[in-house]
Image (cartoon, rainbow over all chains, first blue to last red; front, side, top):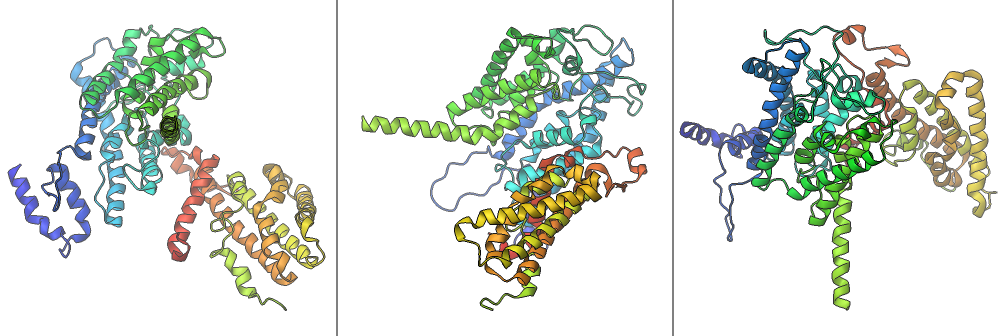
Length: 398
Length: 207
């Protein structure tokens, strides 16, 4: 560590104004502050400094995502082994299979996304913004395992440019960038993002795993329900019944990192204990989901088979829990006022279950619910602030 | 001649410096609606050029006899008449395209570019400059339509004017057409990109 610091200090003058490599100052600065806490102090007045800058915040979110990522690796292997008809599940081989199937996706999103960030930062002469650290790992985790890499690259480039950079970069985006990537993929390449062909790794990687026949299909639980009529039993890819416990643990087909509600809750604990996510949003998303699920249960009809799902299943299946913990709580795009957070979270939960139940075209509504409420968040904040102003004005008059 | 207008600038200004779509931001609705394919975009553009040029000439000819308080009605009647002629011609000679364009040919009548040019130019200028103004603005509109249609058809369907452009080889290796390009939101984003590029070349237009 010491020698690295020395080396950085040695080459630093070249990047200062007037130095040979001044054009790359933001790249250097990005790496230096990524590795070490900046040692600059303010020149005037009294300031309180905290080592928790946005890079640290981002890193904690990435750490909170690790349980989901590891579970996603295990599950990717597990589904492949299960589909190949195996009865033994060697842990390290499963993990290895999952690791090598997600690694290219993570590399591609980081290279494309960070590449664009670096270029834009150089071009504008600004510091490199660190927002993509989280986005880059979120994107592979919310996509099916079989998503082609070039699609990921196109979608990442699209969302980083059009959802983030044109609005001014990290912290200025209106909607969640990872979700825009997924929405782009979903609408542009529906065949690769939904259906029963893409959620289970189909090929063996580096000798790990099994090649599945071309005719193999394995639908996600929500995919099965969308094509069912009336109340239906959710089964795994071999036709065995999936219990609520399986859904909670995450041993079900689905997008890479979102299947395990247990790991999502671990991540939620990390985020809440470090004060990065707001419990108000997480709780109110779940409350909204429960309320809407109960209403759906109460009015369940065979036309909308998903409305038969129990509350527990609704909360554990699909991306609901993942969206509640990692997407809806994004401090940039969520509502900022306290009351607004309750309203925002509640509506995310309601709309997610509403779309899931009553729009058979979209088996999963969490993505669209969060995006929709991202757009409405400033309006909610505005209404809350105005209501507060009016209340206090009245108090003065009275 | 009371007001001296430069015929050259009348016809060339709307192509870029004063483009009806990317600078005046008129006629966006039809840009979203008809540009999923290149062919309807071209036909739509030509229809607008014809209607715009001739309605400009007609209004310019009778501009001194139109009572001010009913001028919008008169303009509408002229445009409506021309639109019906264009629509009938299309149905007679290019039935397939007119089916694709469906209601949007009829809706040329509500296209903001038309009323804008009639009010702003034809009501105050002689027939020949008005004719040129109509041609210029129509071409300016068509350029944008064709650019948007080109990208949306190429990326969304892999074809241009109905001919396969993206080779089969690409599809065999996993290339898939971008379904979002066919949907209207993408037209907005393509128009936004055109505006982006256009403004970065024309610094004086930047706000």
